[in-house]
Image 1: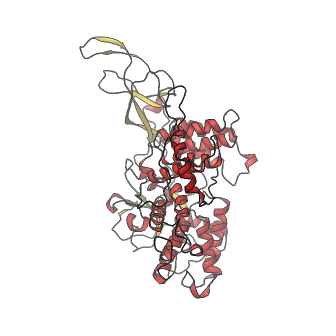
Image 2: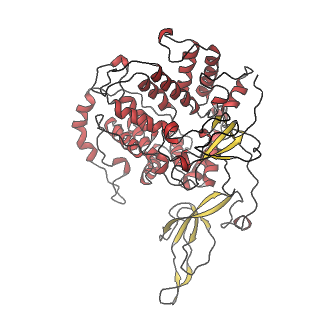
Amino acid sequence: MKKYKNFPLPLSFFITVVILSFSLGACKMSNDTKEVLPRNQSLPLFNPHVADFICETEASKVPPIDAQAEDWFLEARALEDPEIFVEDRDYKKIVDLTRQAAERLHWKAMLNLASLYVEGRDPVYGEEEAVQLVEKAMRLGIPAAYDRMGTYYANSTGVNGDITRAYAFWQKAAQMGNPQAMAFLADKLNVGPASEGAGYWSNIPVATKMLECAFGQGYGPAAFDLHYLYVSPRAANGKINGSRNAETKSRALKVLHEGVKFGCEDCANALAIEFGSPFDLADMLVPYVDKARGERYRMLSNALGFNPNRRFPNLDKILPLPPADLPPWDGQRKSLLDAAMGVRPPPATPQPSASSLLQKPYFLAADYALRPTGLHSDAPTAPFSAYWQPVQGQGVTEAARLFRKGEEFRHFSVLDAAGKSRYGPVTWEQCLTIRHNHGAVEPRAARGLLREVARPEPWLSCACGQACPVSGVWQPWVAADHPLQAIVNQYWRQAWLNQGAPFPLPRRDWLLDLPDDEVTWHLMDASLPDLG
């Protein structure tokens, strides 16, 4: 569902905030549980003049992703490829796959399923069911769910429209680590040169921190607003208090370029103009006019406009920033996009596992293995769809089996603490499906967003502090249980590096609070196709 948040904050907003502050505390109660529904929870009112902003990362707050659910989710995303006409898309299959993933608590699938309900892609469910899904995600502590609820209040989707509550939810989402909410609110706190001196809405230090935090999580659109703050130094009230110079221009240029890698269409368009036909030749952002570079950025901008899901992490292979020479190119759109997009090796064929040789409900495809999560349940039925097994130490030997949400857990004959036999319920533990690939470095994405390449020989791995030993595409990777693995072990974090170049450093180059020694770089592709 496309967000609609492009409305200004009128001066009367804060007067309205005071008048309506009581309404945020007047919460509707659920008839069944007397619980305050998440949609009705009382939240602090939006404060644009907050003194500081602490950067949190969404990836460290969300539940771990079930690998099988991730594959269902990516398959559904591929079926919504912009290359497929809307009328030709199999929305029944898209909904079914997304629902399967959502039942495993795949948080992105939960929010996508809510969008499908709002769009009317499943006639049985509508806006109320979408709100309930988002509330379920809110109960799981998912920052993006708070952002979505804010949008629902802004658009009157399943709830009574209330812009005051919308901003309260967006503020909460930003504080929890949601990059979309950060970028949106930062835009409201950012006074541009045309509004210089307005002051009342300005909070440049907090806007900058929000945008840098969003950018550090790979949110491309944040780069576009951030480049304005970098190029012209400003006071907290928005008044320009420093001149554009070579250093500020270079910083702004770099963040725009990185934004293109993260899929920012506005960034690509801005660089197409800057290099191709700058508005002010006397005060260009770029070091010199270069129409050939401008043409390539324009082609990337057009590609992102058609398919905003694209990412171009290896942009430097075909379009590095000056003073690097511009590599040769045959002028074909496909070769340009292929060179800049992410790559992955062909996945290895998994060997059969013990679970893959069993019958349902114990069966698990050979692509996956199981990992106990430590999440226990004493409920009589499964709280959500997942593989569950009896917790160790109860005298029960039972393989993990798939239970659907609400399905009754089995009873067993066990010995109690006194050594007497009893028949009854036991405590169950959730098992997460993980890839049965022995920890291989294999980034994943929806079909069409990655280019498959042969696995390089020999397989090279390097630490952040080393110099790049071989020119090629390099993939950063952290341990599978690392709290930031969801925003590091991604194809859009790849980098094209020339031999001898330093590897990117997370804090310096990504604006991500991640120690260098926790990241390892792996060579993914050392091929040099002829683009001339």
